[in-house]
Length: 351
Length: 67
Image 1: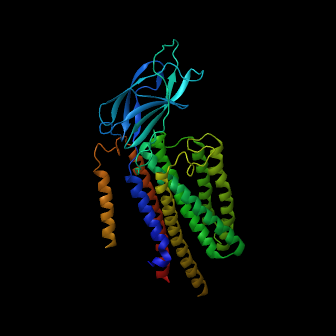
Image 2 (image 1 turned 60 degrees about the horizontal axis):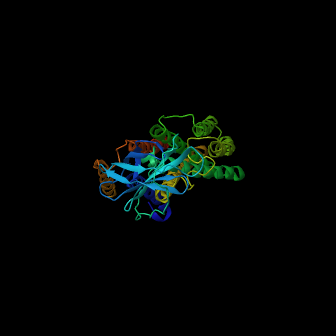
């Protein structure tokens, strides 16, 4: 293959290989997998056993904190290391906290100078019925010193290692949107100019997008099994995606059912514009208006700041580019086949 | 030559994963198999579509032979 004209194919393959290798091999940051108690009483002393993920308690000097949702924290007075993954933290909780509420949200933080900090949210501190005064006091939070820069993906509870699926499941949807937009542009071009090549481009891009969509649904289903516990849930995004896939499947059926080439191309182009206009609100808008298991209600999940971090982005963006270019390559092969087919038919008609 | 390099690249890459020791948390929660499944579906999906394109091409080749 000529590099000058086909550089984008090499780029696509390189990005894809990079996304698979980097996405599977880069480790996760340390995290807290499990703690023994979630509700603590203020004024009591607690032994909290903590199970770490990817931590090295025995090798480094860790310290533990419980942080209130405000700006106060208490340091663990004891950090008994059992092994690299297990430790028992001893806290003397102060008997009062700011505010009148009976419950305060808190976060457990463990920090090491080498690997940085790991957090466990969803901790509650309750006020007991009878107040037991003690000497412990909440202290103001000092800025945690950031650890040396280490290339690792963030640790998230529940999804843990499946955070890597962002590079495959999310990226293939993003690539699909790009390919479908190209198909839409060529459908409009066909309606304006009537050039049959534009119809080949539109249909090839739509078909590969449909394949990407089916892969997206299947991969999402596997991810759902591992993080939500079921292959298919009644999540609004899943149902809307199912409808969109039906709409695009109908595109293929529509094309196959019309014999006359000119009529086929025209009908398909109009239908494609309709399908695109139906898909965007179905997948992009409705799920964000209601409660969805997918991240990013009322936000922009894949490009937002809460769910992504810079290490994820360094693999996520190349994955989108790689999948998009490979999709474009496959679509181009389809276009070339259709061109040849058309030439052969024309030749047969002329003979 | 390209094929050999490719094979070497992937065998090194897979042996890296397979030799992960216990202190490595890669497979400790079993969640990583979800990622393997996803990558497998992705690659298989693309291959199936390529096979279908291959069939289409075969049909055209047959038409050419018949002429």
